[in-house]
Length: 248
Image 1 (cartoon, rainbow, N blue to C red):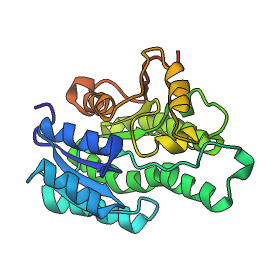
Image 2 (cartoon, one colour; image 1 turned 120 degrees about the vertical axis):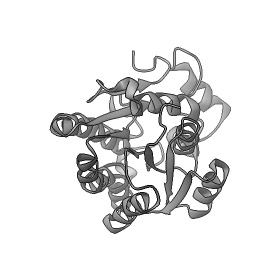
Image 3 (tube, helix red, strand yellow; image 1 turned 180 degrees about the vertical axis):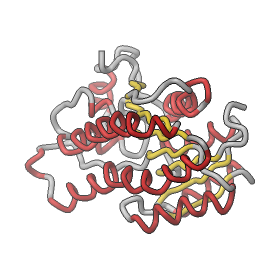
Image 4 (cartoon, helix red, strand yellow; image 1 turned 90 degrees about the vertical axis):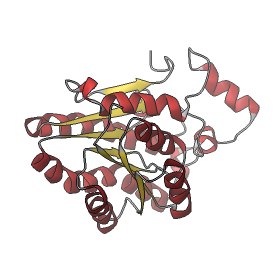
């Protein structure tokens, strides 16, 4: 029960990595705010967790929504100990010249600006409490980019740099900030990463991972759990590769 008495907000928690983190954190005793633009999916996840979870319908690209999400956490549980910026968006694998401006802007809003909005909201709360943890879901794409996902790669590189700078600036307030860098996983975004979801494309992606498989929500949840727990109390500014050796 490594998170007993703590409250975690997890964005993008209605499916994929976010759902995995919400359920794993709850197993370890945390109160959970299941935050997602998909209200039905968030309600399903919260219902499966039980009384220690509430939902927040949030568009993370909107400051008012993010502020309301944090207010709901405080109203429901009285505090915010862990903020997981997990919601993400990507364009389909293909030429960077074919990505329209609206898609580019949405990638920036969800993958980058949302981290800014949530930090403005939770950092003062965490400081008053005596500390806290912020975890940003980045990607191996931000460390070892490959052709076809250029603008997504760039947004995740931004997230990694932001994480490191946030960690240094917030350390005096006892707020730790780390990033997760998952390799492609069994989530709803996988077909977009691959371009086309075919056995051949899956085999190609798996061939780039030394351990021979894609990541799972539980892989990412276990890594996030450790970063969120007191076992990692001296870890900040890290971009943790959860990638089966992909970035070696």
